[in-house]
Length: 202
Image (cartoon, rainbow, N blue to C red; front, side, top):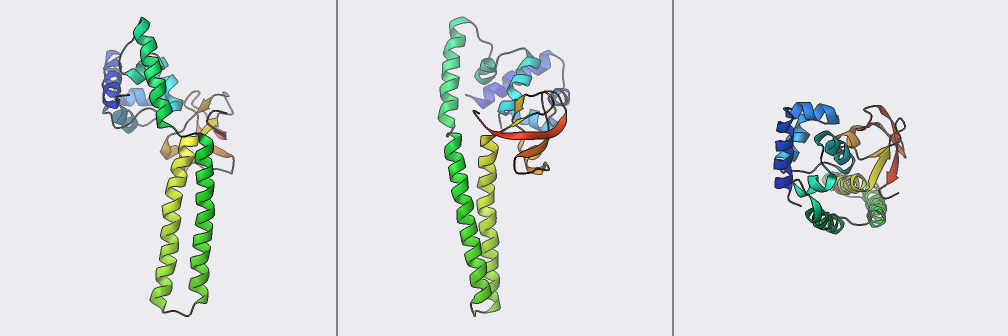
């Protein structure tokens, strides 16, 4: 997949309809900045937004990923290329979850060890502060990839329309949540609710 090609294709389709970036963004319940990022090839629409985007622009997902209108045998060939490309880019969700779990366990062990050492060892104050700072940096270093794994493995089920979607990174990070649910706005129906978290492919 060529992100620049897809971006130019999206831009052309949007202009054909006489829409501004902001008007397209409002129809998809995303920011204007997100649409700009797609059109400049700095990112691709998230999985949960692809179908609504394609419906608005009257194209198929295959055409979106190919960055051009397709017909006949060309359509089939491109579909195979796009599926292979997506397959190569993805690690199975189970593997990602296992890595995430291992990272969490490692994080707890390292942080608890550093805190216990800082509390019990007879060391200078500066050394104690260094150990606490290291524990904090360890938390940050592990939480960042854990969030990236979560973003790439979770999909959410809208309680209103029953459709599945992938939220934007911003919405995911700042949404109120419990262990299994997040309060998110569904890109399909536009309603906000407590959406249930599922592993992709479920």
